[in-house]
Image 1 (cartoon, rainbow, N blue to C red):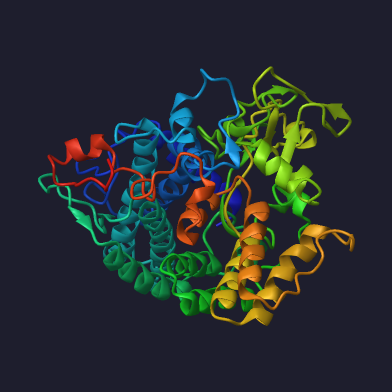
Image 2: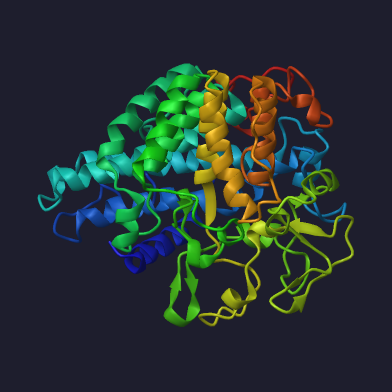
Length: 499
């Protein structure tokens, strides 16, 4: 399926999203087309499957996700500021100050967003498994491809939920109207299920290169599934299995570090060699293409002032800026008041931190294409997992297993790309001391992945929470199960320690 046709489906999906109730355990009747009211020969059954799958993809760039993910993953650390005035974006202020509790709306947003993704994945899987009953034109291979995509997306959702909340309800089907909200399931049990599902899914998925060659952009690839597997094992500190899957990604040849660092987030590099797990946003008014819907990833975090007109949240802190000074990635990470780009001088609004996340900057030449005439950056894709993350994960595993030569080699791959041919920058790490190499890898992840999805939970899994101001041991390792969800479950859901 070409990108244009998938974009139409995604646009329709986003229209459906705008009418969603927001409850993560949505039950029949849905008030929408489903297999219960499907009439054979009316329209192709594949459209039903594609519609639910498009919703699963689309909810990963819904407003709930766009607002909550940068807040919980980045603003919770000392490397990112709320970045606006004291009165703006109160949901981010409580996370920045570590004063949140179970009533925090932004935490509920994040929880609900991922369960909505899971809901649509469960529908997709159900419809794919029953496709042969309704449409003989859908081959087993095609049905398995739909199912494999949904399993991979659902696995990503559960990984993020476990990362943030620990044990969570495991829902792998659509619940009946009278079924109660499930209790929390042990995270190890969920991970065991996810691992087996992803291992099944990989051979039924396509490579990134094949998807790009066919113009079938926006779908998860084999390496997307491998990356989720690797992250699960990394958080379990199962270094050998994590390294097995990062190694398969590296050896697949489907990704590489050839994209210059400052070009990674541009439109022309979408689904390029750096792409492992990427959300597709397409906005071309002159071509009547809009799969972005209510997408505000770039505008929420964008430059607050002229010319970009964003909200300015998730800005680089003074600590990060000082520590990154001299790093060749600095100007591709930080966009500041007075910077000149494309011949234009940027003028920040009068805010406490006039420095912004350059990774969500929409270049002016992109804004001027396709009659966009907007600074909102609706077309900027979300890079959930990048290849350099995988390479650094591999380096970390090798280091922890005592294979320092392999760890140094993979660390050097990332640093070589970062220095951009300037041998005076980022000298090669040559230490034979494991503790020193470990620290170097940790620092590299901090700078390479600044203001993305890793810092807060990296610090927790490393036991370096003393680097998070306001962090409360025995509590802030996990976010609270939202009180709204506990109340809706009639007390079936229990709370995390410390809340």
